[in-house]
Amino acid sequence: MSIDIRIQSKAEQILQHEAAFYGVTPTAVAKAIMDKVVAGDLIRDVLQGVDVASYQDRRPKSHPKPPSAPKHPRQFKYSFKGAPVKLEAIAAEHGVSPTTLRRRINSGMPIEQALSVGDMRKKGARV
Image: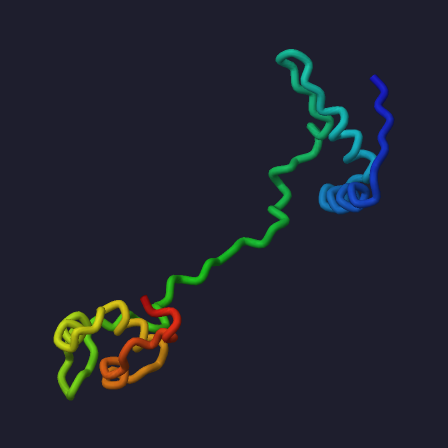
């Protein structure tokens, strides 16, 4: 069985890298890839003489960072008039939606201003 090996430039670079890793020529790696033939139940591998297990993995071992504490922990109670109060209680007391109040506070408004501001939408957008 003769196979005409035509290698593109990118594939040739990959073969050279693999050949340097295994200590053989790029042509030997290409032939080993081509000669790995499945015939029925028989698999013939040309690299049988190479002890692949003795080579270390090329990729460095990853050491993932341990999970860190969140930068901005969620705040369930807000300081309002000197006392810690839940946002839902403040919103119900002043007749503002808790979602609206939370959005205003997260955008940088102080709680007092977020409670006193009326409808912030443009007049044409109000329904």
